[in-house]
Image (cartoon, rainbow, N blue to C red; front, side, top):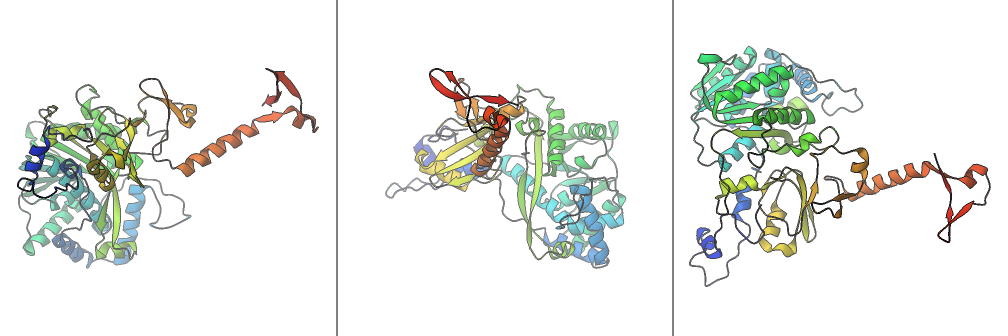
Length: 480
């Protein structure tokens, strides 16, 4: 992170103003609304809409189907992928998550009910990759678990290889691409295969993508072997995306650990994921949200009038090659690897902003950016959103949530912790509001009151038995 009054590039104020187009404007005041570092670290891309040509191709397929049957199959998909029952239903018993085989009906239901949301998450991640690595110029891409070709719809200039075990999915993908070509929006250089090549026949690709696929593999051993092959198949980037659920996050966190090999001293952000280590005892997991515009066929499938929804997802991007060199004069590409990631929506109060972050030191930290810290840092904090990188250091020392060390229930219920200097500090759990804390305190007090009974209550008398200690009367309690 950077101090609140310095730039990560090490530039002077005159150099910074010159690079931002402020030269020649000395005769009038210069108003800088926000830092260019914050612009670089923004993640949001607005509401995502599927390409119109893809929508038209899907409509053409769905027009030939029984709509009630498509909805029935879609509900089975929702139940399988999320472990829940009917969409919007209440009081139904949950349906355990299971693995579906994608035949023709399931593939049709997928493009009608799920493809728009998965596309929005994929586009968000690829947009961030292109923005964070401006010199990235891939020529080939492997899309493992391509489904109907969702990741292929984003970029048309690459040579794609789409892999999927379901022949029905591959046929659906080819049908969509064929319809797009007929409409004059062709995506050339696409090859579909039902399996990965191994050994001497395997081909290296500049980028390998696996979106919403790893969690659908049947066994941990299969996931590990597949991941090893995907990592071996890329020359540069491996992009993994999955559903923003605890199980989806757990799958990608394990994949990240497998590839990094837990060599924790190599680079910041290669440390153990703090949310993964606390997943079994905490209600938080690393995920993000992307708003997607619902096409008409998705609204009809869900029987909903809302024309948008939020797609929850989790992801990790891993890269081969030389690591960025971190120096005081690093460019933003290198320096951004030291910035914190905002892991929950910021709490924007009157005069200050509370931000929960995943820091480069491997901890979850709560930082507070007050108005007194400066106009630019405060404005950046007010405009910051869930998922953004935040480049500013806080004015005061951040509150750290140590999730790497295993803690007992008593430790988690306590409201005090020790900082690095051994001093006692107040600790407020991330994502817990003041009302929740008050409720927890009342429950704890009520529990303690049930465990302490005075002797006069046992005797049934109104008088209390008191003892002397230090010249003061004290009630004598019997601990049960």
